[in-house]
Image (cartoon, rainbow, N blue to C red; front, side, top):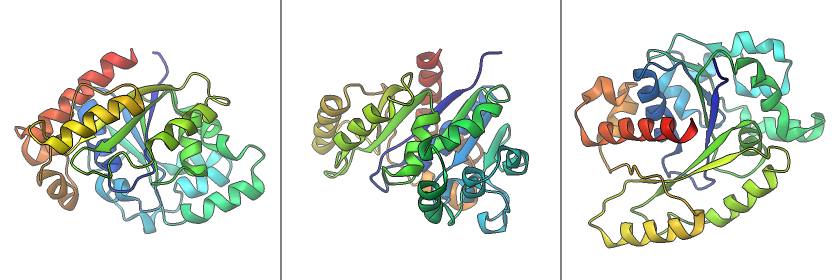
Amino acid sequence: MSSAKIIAIANHKGGCGKTTTTVHLASELAELGHRVLIIDLDPQANASLHVGKKHPSEVETTTAELLLGDVSLLTDALEEDTNFGNVSLIYGSLNLGRTEDQLKDDAPRPSEELATKIEFLKDLYDYILIDCPPSLKLLTSNALASATHVIIPIESGSQYGLYGVTDLINHLSKIRRVNPDLKLLGALLIKHDERQNVCKLIKLEASNQVGHLLTTTIPNSTKVNQAAILQQSLIQLDKNTKVRKAFESLALEIITLVQ
């Protein structure tokens, strides 16, 4: 068994589809028979609210405690009973907001705490997906320092979709000093509609700025919000929708790319 592929879903712009991508990519990979873990590093904990059976505020050991604590907390942090079959979760929490300052003050290598902790999980899972917060600070650095691959979701239907992407690309090259093997899988266009001019322009510009686009694009769909409210995967909600099939094709593309 080769060790897990660890994929960070990162973009410091809010509302570009990071959590949506994390959650539905996880459910599709699990549907294809893979063992999947979601690590929620976002203080808003939306991935945890969607996938987890408990409210993040009721969870004792979240990513906040894990980052600051001892590796022995890993067993407490790992939740295998979730709303999605074959998908485990390490919950996010509001406390993550404070974690960054504490890491800065206390950790000898502030951006490598997650990497040391998840070393022990690599043989338990095929895929570990990390939902990053909308910032380039220490939490995102921890995700990128521990990842084997990174996906950058970009909201295609918005003229601000590419805002700050070059900062993220520059940040990746800094992180490669501690994690030289980090591979960029590419930008993933979210809410993409090939017929709209703004989407065509964003696609072109994203290709220029990021250097590589994933072939799969994710269309706009009300099903995504519905699935979040009902705490379901798109497979459970309605497996024949266009958006669900797009995530299925994304999972298949990712599997091929990370082999």
